Image (cartoon, rainbow, N blue to C red; front, side, top):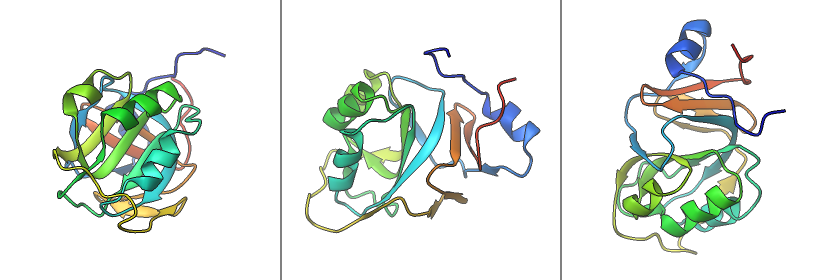
Length: 166
């Protein structure tokens, strides 16, 4: 088995799987990797990145962390330190329905990151509770633990499982 993940073009995936979910084009590209894919792990949080920190400090196993931050643009949920943890622990990428911070630090990491925007204000730990492993809905798609996400410059596609390498 190759140590490099197979990359898929979202256009090809979308063409081959017309029933696949395609996210609304609301995300900006952050992180040092533009194209990434992997099995989904979900979090639902609001202006508190405690669960995000816990997740990225654990083994990523090539997965994509999908964080529903409620679309808040009042603080960053993923910053430079968490991006280093995610990259070090083998996460393929992070998709945030909310903001990131430390954009230059994220760009220096071998990690795919999508978010609505950058915001310098940090989140407040302990402010709100959150949930892990539940379906989350944003950007016109439903993200479920264990399903598959593919992202590149053209957008984000979600399928029930990874397509066969072409």
